[in-house]
Image (tube, rainbow, N blue to C red; front, side):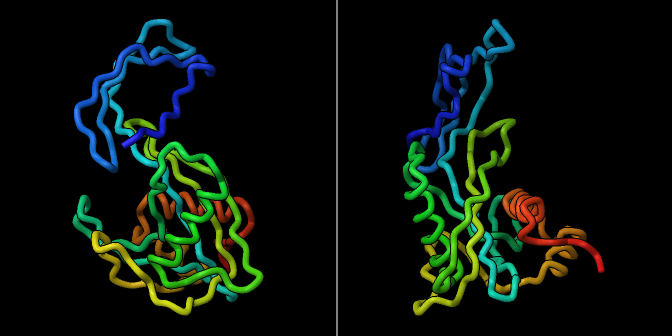
Length: 203
């Protein structure tokens, strides 16, 4: 894979040396010796380079958010989360391409699509776990959505068990009860609340 290199020498960061330990189509494990703007002495750090990704919050006309219930092998559990997917070209920063990936993942994982007059709103980007990976995600709110003419077309590698719409009160309770516990969904909920698209205020 081509790593989505966030390090920019123009920002004062410099990679002195790099050793790749493992690489496939999805990620690369690399030990880099890096000089930062704040430290003249380079430091070694093992980094997992991953493709960029999109995370979508599908909102129904009633203001509910659609989540998928998906089995996740690394944690040996099925959890409720926002639909998401990787961007095949890790170096692609064309927002039109990224938006198209978001529309595709929405359709493939949930079977929903933007309704007539709907909009795909960019809510910025984030880093999933910057202590060890440069994986960067882009948040999108899709509203309103409707069930598409065709059902979902999920990848065989995915284990999506269910797809349901949840109210803001239900989402707040699920976060409070630790039912929602992946960084993508928690981060998306925080961004939606901060931007005023969702409210967790108690009555």
